[in-house]
Image (cartoon, rainbow, N blue to C red; front, side, top):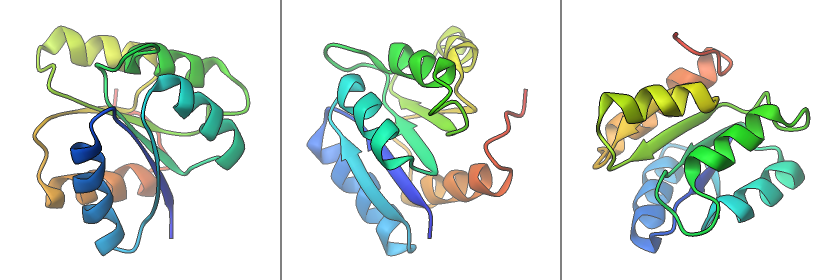
Length: 127
């Protein structure tokens, strides 16, 4: 099954997402911030990254932009998941290289469905 990286500085959010995904057969790995995500993404090459936006240090927008520009990680689809719900936040996330943007709170069913959808289309953006 696919390896999904969860990037969020909230242990509670990581636990909720990890539980939802693992119950459906996904493998997961977690990173607590953008810097850790960048390091782990290069090492582990996950099939999908679920990226929070607001984190200390390297935020989700910065990490997504770096992943999209790095030849080693640019093929990994990133779905941003954030409490930031403005249309401008979504547009900015997509411009940084994300393939989709979900607003928290995200139900377990919606999270799993989005992961399956993105993985089935090979990470290509809908835009």
